[in-house]
Amino acid sequence: MPLLLLFIVVPIVELYFLIKVGSIIGVIPTILIVIATAVIGTALLRQQGLATLHRYQQSLSSGRLPAQEMIEGLALVFGGALLLTPGFVTDAVGFLCLIPITRQAVIRWLLKRVRIRGVSMMSQRSRWNHQSDDFDAPEQPQGGRTIEGEFTRKDRD
Image (cartoon, rainbow, N blue to C red; front, top):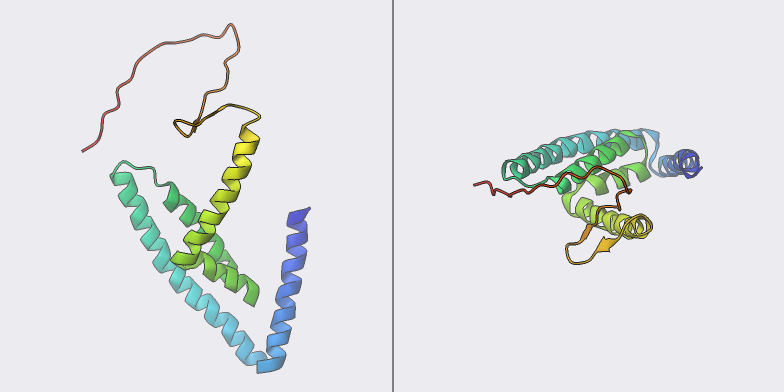
């Protein structure tokens, strides 16, 4: 239901602002602004996308999980889609997703909200291990087959 509401409210808000701005500055300048934001947004998306891809590749080559880069990539795709949608509100949110400082701030804010919800939801399913900041494996049902073994972590040079 909230998604349906979003698909109804956002176009109405966009139309309101397009009509309001169009009545103040005129139709042609309003259309030119919408086209300009799409062109600028596309260029910014390309530049930021290539920079994020480069950081992603560096993370992989150094043996680190590129989680931050993957999340930023999703934010870039979302922001790019919003910039291609005609309107001032979607353009503003789209630019927030494309500008590195605001994109990282939005991602941090979202991760805090998801983490808080994730911990409360996961606490019902498994136990939280505070020493390692990781989830313990859930209890295995009785009668299961257990394979014991050892492993050694080798650091990459």
